[in-house]
Image (cartoon, rainbow, N blue to C red; front, side, top):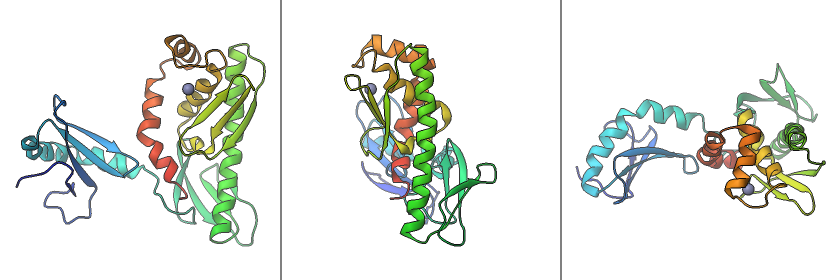
Length: 240
Ligand SMILES: [Zn+2]
């Protein structure tokens, strides 16, 4: 069978279409076959140097089927926040449950369950406000931690739902703004984001001097930047 650039097929052998989707991509500059996860699209991508190499690339991707399925399974689905769904909070799974009445969302059962009243939109709104409160608490704490480490005066922190950025810092106004969605990420990723914004109080750019301040705060930051790149799309899909 001849494959084409851009073609999508099921990762399962002889795929009936139920398994994860594999997108075929040709990049003449690629030196070898590689597979990556496109979290935003919710599919795996296999890259080959030429269209002729795609047959081998598909076979290669199928040897990685377990890894691909696992990576795509941890991706939170882009569907409404509703009872029965499992989302992540500080990197740990949390199940959404309904409570009778219209009460506010609460984190219960040792933080493994969010229970909320309300129905439909009202339910989703209550869960989202809880996640925003959790985001504020965690991000304020990590921001203060990094401010103290750098001997910086306090800043004003706000929580938003920006689609394009995880955070921003205005050194002039001494304000930092975060996307609440990062609270779904594992703690080291949240910590890195706070360090990233606090370090901008020292250097407003992304120069090597800036990155060395970030490194002083959190050590090697590359894994956490990669995590955001790989999973960012999935976090942005939650509740939409
Ligand atoms: Zn930055």
